[in-house]
Length: 343
Image (cartoon, rainbow, N blue to C red; front, side, top):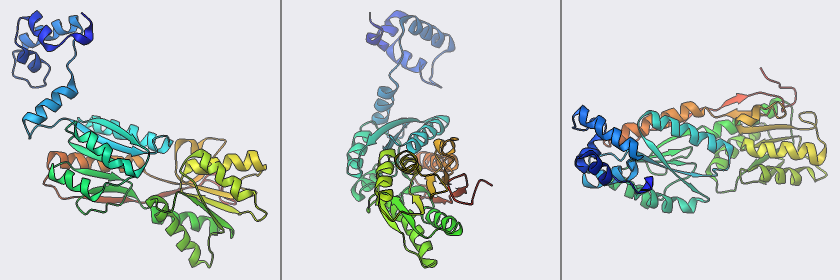
């Protein structure tokens, strides 16, 4: 018999026990004699049987509202971004360390978030993490009604009943502006996402406000989509003009590396001799010897640890009030700002 066709019924028949005994044998703390458990596990091993954990948890959760499924739904946009890929890896490890498993849905746009959550809820998830996106008011209320806590990661909650953990985007933009002003730059460009992107809005707002305090406005503003290619395309638009910026602040490292590549290979520019460049996030490739990108670091290990702690506490006790935490970014000086090397 193919191993995938083997069910608990076949194991029970071979072991001479009931199907419920097989289920208890595979359940930690199940009420079953140790000798019987070992016998069942031995037979199951010989037959190549493994229980369907998802099906079992869903079945139990449906029949007992107090029972946890052990699964957390995670919705993420821009999964192709190495920053988010790394973030997902840390979330998975931290959730598993606390006894939960992750169900991942990747969406392309904000408009797909509610549909993804509807799909995830069919798996009787115990909680939801939404990365760099928001829920509609309707879906937020649905989660509340079903007792499913929601964690928004790197987004400001529009609903006071939703938990969140995020970076201080506004202050990060101010830090970047301060560094470029201190380096003596005046023709300072900004490259961010679309005008409705919340992350871009806050980083740009802090950046522009700090420039304004020194009597400057952004020299030019270009739009990307947080990808390497969009950073390269932004560089083509910035440096193909007669009047070029003397510095650029990017809302993400990935776009900044696209600008770095284009500046060197399309325009034969040297960095920081010809212009200075600052990114945001501090992805691992920002520190590669060929890049050494100055950036604003997000302390993702601490942020993710806090997000998982907040969510798991509320999955265990749904009566706990919502909690939101902000973390400051840290300036990481490397080699892409004129006159300001690593310290």
